[in-house]
Image 1: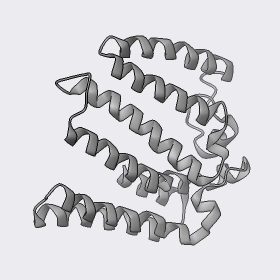
Image 2 (image 1 turned 90 degrees about the vertical axis):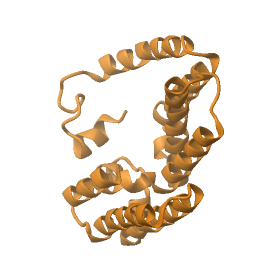
Image 3 (image 1 turned 120 degrees about the vertical axis):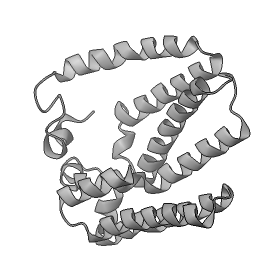
Image 4 (image 1 turned 45 degrees about the horizontal axis):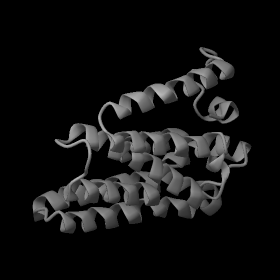
Length: 203
């Protein structure tokens, strides 16, 4: 939660738009944590653990400013938090809320790897605000060359997972073509709006 960054990058968000104060946001943020933990515990101890890990990582990322650390730490923290969320959601959606089967576990691990190596795709549109608060993201550290850090891992993950899951050539071609398309959007982008469009397709 960084009002200064949001004022520059995402002025439509509730705090910079003055729809809620920082103190009210903090109160709501901490009030929700025990509610989420309780709801998670209703499914299984494992979903509670996943929720607790997510809450802990959110604490490190926001209150202890891990988001301002080295870009590798930022990427890994994002990936681990999303993995915790995915584990909890998958446990709830699955037949057994106490365990992940092999396919689900492999999917979570793959998602974690994808996020760890590409989640900085979200940072290109926020360079001005990130630079203003001293955040060292991939686009800031590597400059124009950072655009290649999106297309290369996306294509590698697409090809690798197509092989892992035994997809047909036709489906693999579609998946890989989409990865190339998203990567090219980043290579060609120059404005914040163009990066927003690219990030929309990344998602």
